[in-house]
Image 1 (cartoon, rainbow, N blue to C red):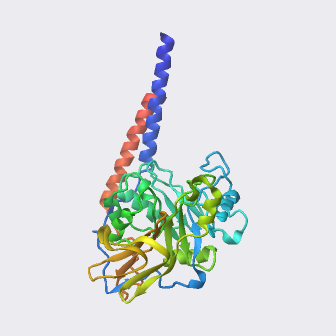
Image 2: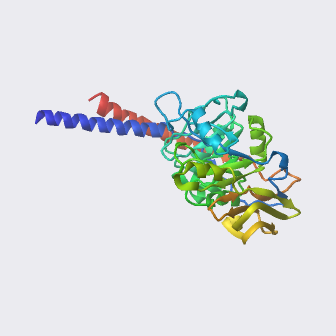
Image 3: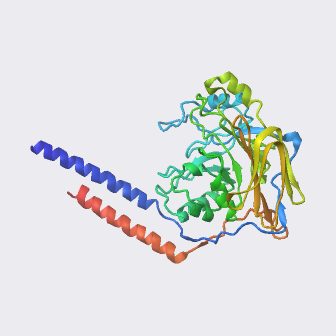
Length: 401
C-alpha cells in the first residue's frame, strides 16, 4: 500500500507540476498592448479602387502557391518531403511560383537562389492563429500561446509589421476564436487567406472588408502531404507578374493584380487526370473597371457569377455565362467577383472598393488603433501578479515539498 500511495503522490505532483508550468507559460506569453479599436467604417469616397489597373496581358497569368510546408532539419516536421521533392510535385501540376513557408523557419530555395523568397508561417499557439510573413531576415519567435483577445492578435500583427514586407492572415475558418467582432477590429495585414475550409463564401473576408479593412485575397493549399491527390493542387493563385523573383512577387502582391481559385481533386486519385486538368484550368481572360462599372470575362462558361458586397450581400447573380458586369452604386462600399464552374472550380477576384484619390492612392489604410496606456499597464501588471502567484505555488507544492 505504501508503494501505491507513493506512486500516486508522485503522479499527482507530476500532473500538478505540468499544469502549473502550462499556466505559467500561457500567462508569461500573454503580454500585449491593449487597444481602443476604431469603430467599423465602410469604404467611402468618390473614386473606385481597381486592383487590376496595372494588368499586363503579356505577363498574365502565373500559377502560384505560397503556403507550402516541407521537411526541415530537426525532429519537428509537418511534411515528409524535402523542398526539392515538394517543388517537383507542384511543378508537374503547373505551378510557376512556389514559396516554402515552414513554421517559424526560413527555408532556402532548393536549386535557384534568384528565386529565394524569405517567408515563414508565424505562430505555434493553441488556437492556430497563424500568419505568413514575407520579407523578414529573421524569424520572430514571440507568440501568445492562448491569443484570446483581439488586442493580442493586433499586437502580433504590429510586431510582425515592423520587420516584414507583407503579412497574410492565415486560414481564418480553421482558427479558433475567429469571430465577426474580431474581424471587424483587427487590421494591419495585407492579404487574407481565402477558401480555407469547406465554405466557398469567404464571409470572414466580407466581415473585415465591410468594416473598412481592405486586403487582397490568396488561396493556398497549406500543403503538408504532396503525395496525396486530395491535399495538393486544391487551391492556387494566378499572378500577373513578369517573373518569380521576390521583388516581382512583392510588387504584384501589394498591387493586387491577381486572383485566387479553388480546384477539385480531378480524377479522384488518378494522377494523370489530375495533372492534365490542372494544366487547363478555367481562367480570367479580362477583368477591370470602366467608369463605375466592374467587368469580368472568363475562358469558359460558369454555372454562375456572383458579385458580393457590403455585409456579404449579393449585388449580382448571373447564371450560365462567361462574363458579367456590375455598376457600383452610390451605396456600395466595395464589390468582388466569385465565379462557380460546372466541375466545382471557383474563382475569386480581389475587391474593387471606394476611396478618395485626393487623400490616398487606395482604400488600404495603416492600422490606426490607439494603445490604451492605462488598460495596457493594468493588463500586464495583472499578468505579472498572476505569474508570481503561480510561481509561488509551483515552488511551494513541487520544489519545497
